Length: 266
Image (cartoon, rainbow, N blue to C red; front, side, top):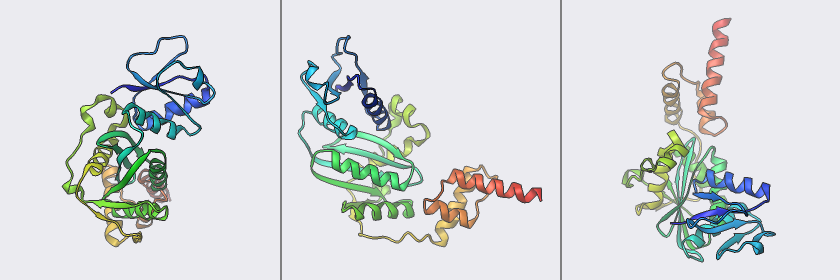
């Protein structure tokens, strides 16, 4: 498939487009007015002011960077809208998100917090033209899963839950560019794509509890030992903060390490 070309002298727009497409792992080519447009470019994105001066069959412009990119992707597939837009979510401390339009993987990214994941998914639903959509979330990491479902439900976004044991794994590791892009987080993208593609799901409730159980706290403490390579176990209070999204696992481990060091110095 051909790719998106960026052609603009608006530095702010150029900067924002590049950052967004890198974050979403969308292939693109940077173009210049004094160079020939490569045959691999299928659509050009630019500013509203520059659009009429660009001599190319397909030019997309607008005021919202994500909307510009979403419409450009639609044009590349010769579509006005997608019959079915799927969003796959692999919930966790780092949440994998994948967008699939009519069977084509359009966008992949990793959200660094639950709030960020909710914002990203809400934006996806609003900017990608579609007839129908379905947001699918993996059943694992129950607390973060429930927080994401609750947040999306408040925005009237329908969510279904996928049993990840029933999914067929999709591996981005076959693509070196994608593996370089996501590195050790690639498995979150693998899972998000598999979740989006899954046909086995159940409707989510409108509201779920996010009160961590004793088992949830113990599990986070166990993971802290793994992440810290066995050097420490975070406290129950820090584990609760990790579950509730107030702090990352890495920061919790660092706080525990400083606390233990301070205790040893006394």
